[in-house]
Length: 199
Image 1 (spheres, rainbow, N blue to C red):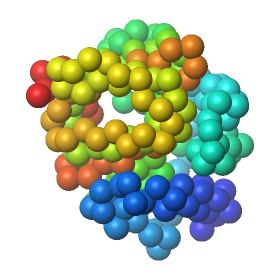
Image 2 (image 1 turned 180 degrees about the vertical axis):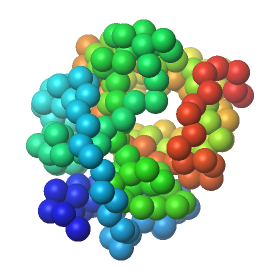
Image 3 (image 1 turned 90 degrees about the vertical axis):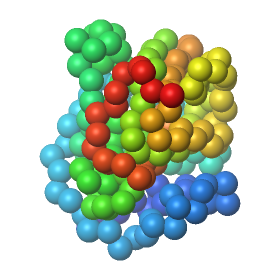
Image 4 (image 1 turned 90 degrees about the horizontal axis):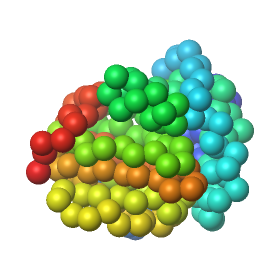
């Protein structure tokens, strides 16, 4: 295991261990340090420029994890599911994800996909849904989240945000960017989200 990948995995699993009492066991119990590393080519995105501000505003314990990501940002394979044709160039410039483990992540896992989502300031991730059940844990506060037909609600760092299978959800940031941990299970782990028309 490379040193960079080992630091990322250790910090990621360490953070989840700290909050494991608030995570559904079906997400946390399947994670361990024995995962095989996958060789991925680093890929940099424009949204990584927000990581310095994220480290400034992330409270403990998320700050330590955000710092590891920020310091090693150029060593990872960041991805995007959408293009400017979907939501516009401004969204694409302020959006990206890093799969730490899963079917396409830095570590191989067949049942769980887990990693990070970045959204820059004043970004709107429209209503979307997917088969996989999902947990988000924001490392920064102030982002508004919506589930189903409910209203947008501001969620704070460390909140556990649960999206059941095929339930619509959306996010929009304010003046500060978002860094959130995500966990997927129970569906195609590399599925492209469907925009709108869920439950």
